[in-house]
Image (cartoon, rainbow, N blue to C red):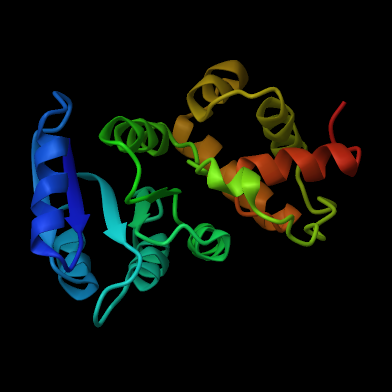
Length: 206
């Protein structure tokens, strides 16, 4: 699979590419020095498996990349990688549609684990989120959920991955991803942990 690395620091970008090349599943690593180049490469490379983008770059930054790709290529996961470990930056990235957020201080093994998770259709939330002050509770009540989406939500609350949900409910994994996105929107959340908490508090699952 191909991975696109986006960072405006050449030394860090090449170092990250070297780490990724050591993973047998990676067949190629593309590099971009800014968001504008990244979006052009993403448009020209339909077989890209994932994007790893720095949060803050000159010109088109990481959040803009996430927002654009969320609209143009919703099945392409973007893992945000940043020197910032501020919880607000994590929340902004996830709210923009990032599939995960990994601090640059993380060990290579942590980065690869996060990448594997987002490639599986999951959301990677770093441990620092658990140490952050609580955010205001989401206000979505789930009243707009369809019966099928409620079935998917039940599976989410049981800790099932998208692949497991697809198998359990006899649907394509792509369809599951669509239902998960709709659930997040209905519950006004940005990741699974929030969805589970809201669903349980609202009595949406047994």
